[in-house]
Length: 495
Image (cartoon, rainbow, N blue to C red):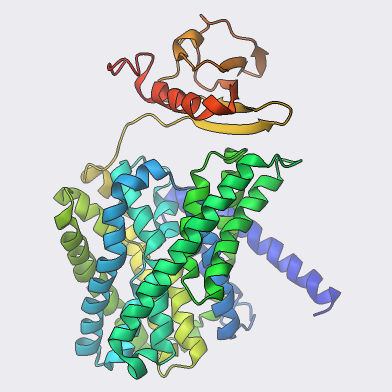
């Protein structure tokens, strides 16, 4: 590649990126996942459209894994632990036992109804099993779901990639046929446990370090945070453990640590996540070729997708919910909201890259199933959420941004008062912040003033609070309590 090729790539890439970003608004307004628009862009640019020929399965495999690393990092860094923690058991069960049930049911359907041999049937089932948080929340990002639902879906989609990747790689490499199911089970357990250990260690160390090192520019914090998540992936992968488990757990720990410039970091990683999704889906659209699709790929995709959507997924959710108190209506929504997105298509590049017999048909079948059933499931999700009673009218939590004050042991907190927060109408003195924390400035309607303790907080105010590091967490907790329950929070009365 020379500089002229680079100019062309930058021109085309910038144009595609702009179109893809504009498509986000369109997809949200019509209630469809933006991934379908990105796939359509890839198909339009590909060999069946404008003629860009991309058929390198090895490169697609590598770039796909790179994109998934960034998507999982963004998912972990933007997930609230208080939502995931009460639902971690349910989400983990769906990601492990639920994935196993899904693979068995879909594989049986593929073997007996499509006459596939067992190895290819299990491979097809495994590839289609993981859910995709990016697909789900591109539809529901503006819908206020109950934390029990969002926590479950986030935990499941963040954790179910790792065991499935191990399974798909092992089958594609022929290790299951050579060494047996027992070896595969031991391999999955080893990779998950060691990968999780790397994620915990690197996530904890990264948070500890960033709380103690004042970097010279705020823009460096997001870069270091995302670098730590990638370090977790690379370290685990280097010892043949699950890098996907490591990156998600490290990101979850870092995303919920009391780090400086947390809101800026979240905004940065959301942008990185969008960029990864756009690049990944456009590339997968380029790799797919409608000219190679046969009618059997279409009806195989329709049949396998139906088994997955209407049999395996509901059965999985029902079995896993036995250990948890979840209503039938919530189970219905969680079952229907298990959208497939980029992950199954990326996983389909693994056997394609390994040269497994029938892998091109498998890729085409997966592509058809993902596109059709994402369209089918995504359209009614918002209405289904209302019908199932999983919407919430709870006030939004305040977002707290922190910047270190280098010359003293204190942080400057910036709080935006959102619509619906019960901070609105509360007097500054009624916040009852701990000693060592105080509201120093209020920004309202593009004007600023130093508040008196009797001044009332209003919607869309920005509060600047200086808090000593020793009381920062206590001050943040108090602000969130008042935001949820009003001025009487802490007195045992929901104000």
